[in-house]
Image (cartoon, rainbow, N blue to C red; front, side):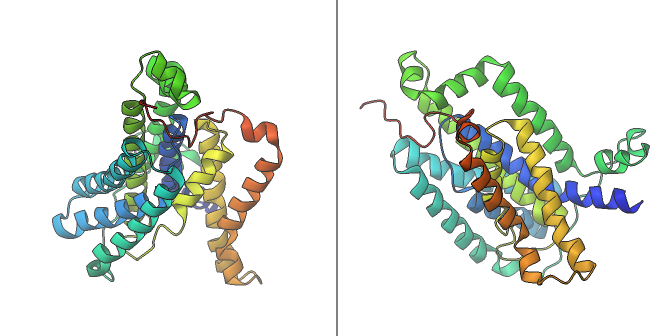
Length: 306
């Protein structure tokens, strides 16, 4: 493997959890719900996935546990914000704190325990293509899933009637409700989908990124995924571009540290978050970009009886 192939491989590895979480959150926000609990759902997915490997030595169960962990918190978030009509921002932040706390408690027994890597599945023929073959077709199943998820979300949102209804709910829940669409049911499904994606993105970390459990191992990736949705103007393909850009920034810090670049390591570690802030500032200064494709009912509570 050449140096460029190794570099691209690490970028794809770093970008995959961001892409999966961002696409899930994109669907949630397209339905008009602002879920700031992605970080908490990711960390719950991470710890439960590690538990699946630790107790059952099964990759399938680990992925299932991770996905269900994210969905469990998403269900709680949906109950608070959709059924009880609480503030979405406050509920999302609370869910993040809950997830971080719960994962620390559950994962205490796993600290220092060895994990297992998700095996790579090379696609015959395609993985032998020079340069891109090992990068795109010699990956683990979650990387392939992220590619399929990107295509699936794009197709669903812009090529199906159900996607059109979901976007209509996100733009005007009153109008969608008046037309007879079940707004709350649609939003529940979107929130569960986003929670499942966040849990799976978290599961990627102990199964494919670093085969171990460490408290707080999501390291702000849930917040970066949230920023990616804004960066992408709520469009899946742009979210993918953003995920790989942020993945490159994440990897850049490691290469700079390995090359002993004369920059404080703390500053290098902060690069992804500085890039997130810079992108959000740039986007917010451009009103046209900031408002394009924004779901008009995003963050607004809907109560059918009122």
